[in-house]
Image (cartoon, rainbow, N blue to C red; front, side):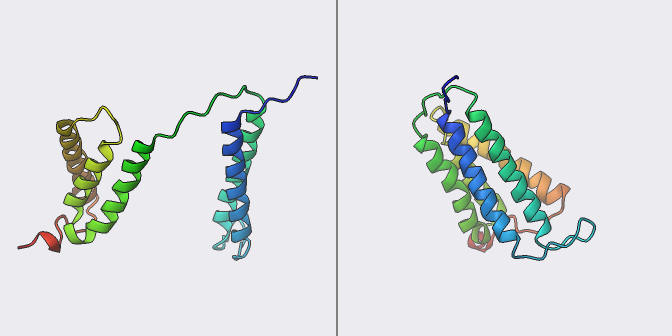
Length: 153
């Protein structure tokens, strides 16, 4: 019989999915489920949680079929900048408004890559901001302030 090899990365991912899925299954069972045609507030979260658990089982099963590769070191720089950007956006959007907050968040997130230079980050941030304003403000007509009270003199 062939010895069991376990891909640690995929096994950890599968176990995490299973644990989160089972947690949300337990949480959704405390809500009214309803039926398929008259769904209650717990029906859709239950279906998603069961899907997440099933996905975790598939990943865990696949982890037994492949050879393990070494886990690479964490990209701390990327995590720092990518996680900081939406926090800055959330803290500044009411005061600065959509346009400056989005520009600032995109500018911060662009430095997650070590290859990004200052001029490239500015150009990328302007492009993302213009595209987002065109889509969300003009095309969809969402009612938000483009420039907030902190920028009114």
